[in-house]
Structures are given as C-alpha cells and as structure tokens.
Length: 187
Image 1 (cartoon, rainbow, N blue to C red):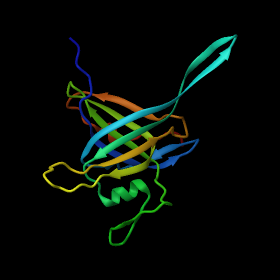
Image 2: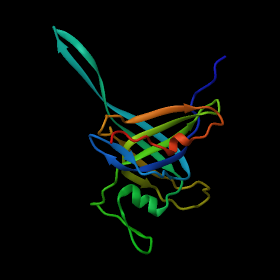
Image 3: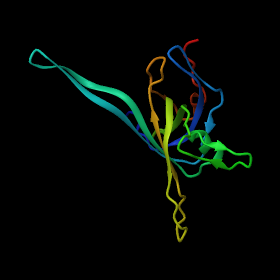
Image 4: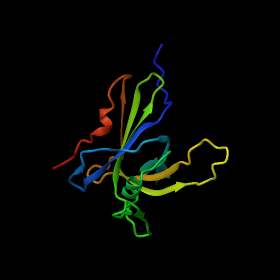
C-alpha cells in the first residue's frame, strides 16, 4: 500500500529580499523573514492558451505560463513587515505612511504544505510582489475569530532563466532548511 501524499496543511510562510534579478544573475539576501500565523494559501497559475493553424487545421496548441497569483491569509501582520511588503515608509515612531506611489519590492516567497504522511511539500516562488493587502474589520461581539490579512502576490518569472516556482518534498521529521536558502544563479 502506498503512502497517502495529499496535502492537508499550510505553514512556515516567509520571504527573502531579492538582491539581484537581471539577465545574468539572481540572488537573495541571506536571512528569510518569517511571517507568523499563516492560515491559508490559494495559488493560481495564470496561463494563456494558444493555437497555431497550418495545413488547414490546428498544427500546434498549448498554453504559456505567464505568472502565478497567490492569496495568502495571515492572522497578524507586524507594521514593519507590512511596510516591507508594500514599500510603505516606516517613521521614527514606528508608525507607517502609505500612499499610491509606494513601490512594492520583489521578494522570494517560501512556505510548506503538510502532507498526509507527515512529510512536507515545500514551495518557493522566485520573484513575487504584493499587489494588494486587505483586512475586514468587524466588531468583536461574540466572535472568537481573528480578523485576517489577505495578501495577494503576483509571482513572475525571474529574469535570468524564466523560472517561477520550485517545489520539493521532504520526509516526516526532516528539517525544513530548504525554505531558508535560495541558491544564487550566475555571477
């Protein structure tokens, strides 16, 4: 009987700041920023269908993978992390100022999905930008639930080789160190 490998969890969400992403090289800063309280992650690959006609029929068809949209919900968000993801300004008193000219930086996302056998499937998106951060404030009333932040990211190909995502599996009990390192490419 084979192991059950379906996915049943989401955790260990974090990101690296990208240092280089050009036609020759790709690298990140050494330390992964962990974002606590990960709740859900919904990735959607964005593809464009094509068909090439020749000889009075469809000669070739398929789809081109252009990007991935990820919606990630977290139960809490520290202000410095919020500012870092959106490009907002952090003031001396640790408040943040946000505006329409803020430029979200490209970051490398990484997270784990628990498998039914106790191992993990690990994901890395090489170049992503936060395109929207939303939260719905409600009165506490009788609720015991947290008001979650939903962060929408758009992951695009890294410039040196066109890769968008890397995925690996690790066995139950294995360290999740793969999430903490990103192998540089090029010079």
